[in-house]
Structures are given as C-alpha cells and as structure tokens.
Image 1 (cartoon, rainbow, N blue to C red):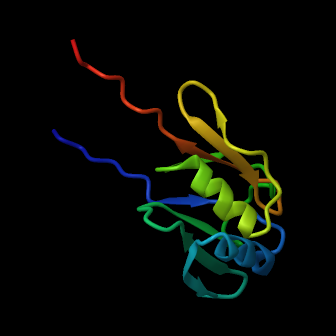
Image 2 (cartoon, helix red, strand yellow):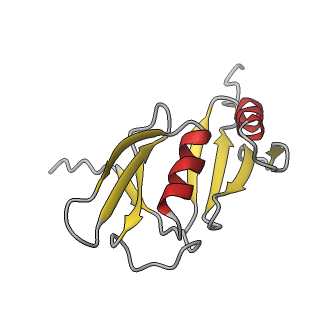
Length: 128
C-alpha cells in the first residue's frame, strides 16, 4: 500500500478573529475563506504565499487556549528576505540566526502562537 499523507490545514486558537486575520494578511497570507456557516461558528482560512498548507482561525472551531499553538515552521529560500518582509510589515523580531541545521527567524502572532521561518542549510558538496 502506498499511502500519501499531506498536512493541509492547522487550526490556531485566537482571541480576536478580525485582529488575527488582519495580522496574517499584513504579513502576506492570502485570506481564502471567511464565513459563518451556522450560528456560533466563524471559519477563516488563510494561506502563506506558495504554501500547500493553510491555517484556520475563527469562533467555535477549537477548544484550545489562544497562544498555545505548538509552533509552526515555514521554509523559505532566504531567511534574510523573510526577516525584511516581516519587519517591513511591522513586526519587531530578532534578525536571522544560523543554528547549524538552518537559519531561522522567529515570531509570534498577537495571541502568542509561535512561528519559525527556516532557510534550509546549503547541501554539502559531494566533490571528491
């Protein structure tokens, strides 16, 4: 059996859906969907540019406490470019740091949900 599994959606708990939606769209996420399918539910789906995985925020979609996200990692071609993009969007974050297994930039959303942005290390040369 050849079973393919892809993560396509991660739910994050937030205190203020509109504030969180504004935050994520301000750093470049696409607002894919925002609806109230029935009473007590608001479902907002946002996708980082170029990603096959989205995040969902809203009302009545998770019992998790805001800010308790397990941490999400996005991979980029350039941690420096990501840093410049995020700081231009108004985030105050530390500059990229090479941690040996990648160069990282870290940020949190307004509720404290942690994010890591990783530039993978260059492949080692196989020249003899």
